[in-house]
Every structure is written in structure tokens, then in C-alpha cells.
Length: 228
Image (cartoon, rainbow, N blue to C red; front, side, top):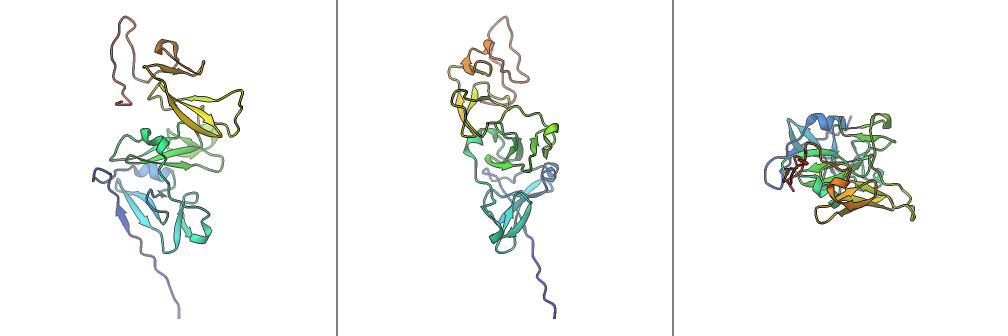
């Protein structure tokens, strides 16, 4: 007599904090393997079906492994596979009704999955870097990476990083033990990557794409990439 085990896969659509279904890009999910971690449970994973985010439960006593993109037995999993919210990246997630996949502004080997307004930090692994243009983990030669914290600190040469997303010229980061610590310039000053100080906008090399100032007068110009 033969015994067979049938796994029933049930997908559940996920709603945003506003109560609407979370929209997603099937192409973006496909570029990262098709299945992404769940923001709620290590025993579930996320897929994009017909433009809507859905969660699928792993078989009993299985957990989702982000590195392989599959469900594995619990004893094979060395750590919880679901993504814990990364509070330091909350400002990147601006659309409560969509799943967005964004580069980590301070680590080129990582990317941020915004489940609505909830950011989940993920790593590419295998020496790959996140390619924001293709939204895939790519070989380093295909990725332009200028912002990443070193693993070891030099107490005589602290590393300061600008805002890699070019959305806020006052935002910058201090690297400490391989991790970025966020700072903001006050009084409408800009961070200058050359001097590593906050200075007047005209003395900083930071600029937001799409924003051009009139040299003959003072005016308020809308930032096209940030409503703040």
C-alpha cells in the first residue's frame, strides 16, 4: 500500500493598514525569486498574484527560508526567517497601499521590502549586490555602489554617509560597528559629503533630482520625491 501526503496551498490576500489590499508588482517579485518573507510569521511567505499581495502558509512544522526561497523543516532553520520591521527605514516606505522594493541607502548588499508602511530588511547573499534599476540581486560589476558602512571602525577616521536616495539633503548617517546611525541637519542646512558637516545649501554638493533653484531670488520649491 502506498501512502501519499498532499499539501494544500492556500493563499490569503493581505490588506494594508488602511484596510485596502496591498498592490504589488509580479515582475519585482519574480526578480527576487517569486517568494518573499512574510512580515507577520516565519511559517508563511509572500507572493504577488494578479497584482495583489498574498500570504501562503508553509506545511506544518516548516518555516520559510529567505535565502533559498522555500519552506524548510523547522530543525533546518537556524533562525526566524520572517522579516522583523526595520524601524530605521520607516521613512523610506511612503505608500501604505503598495509593496515597494527599495535599495538599502547604507548597504548595497541589502534591500528593503516595504509592505505598505512596514519596512523589512533583506540581504542578497553570495557576494551579490542589489540592483535598484532591475530590482534584482546582481553581480557587483553591474551595480554602482557608493554608500556602505565598513565592518570595522577607524576611530581616527569616522565614516559619514549622505542620503543615498537623494530625497533629503539634511539626512545623513554615521557608521558605527558596521551599522548606520541616522542624523539630520537642523535649521534647513544640508549635509556636505566633502567636509562631513552641515552647511548652507549653496555650499553643499547635495541636490534633489528635479529641483532647481532660481539664483536671482528666494522661493519655495516642492520636493518631487518627498512630501515632507
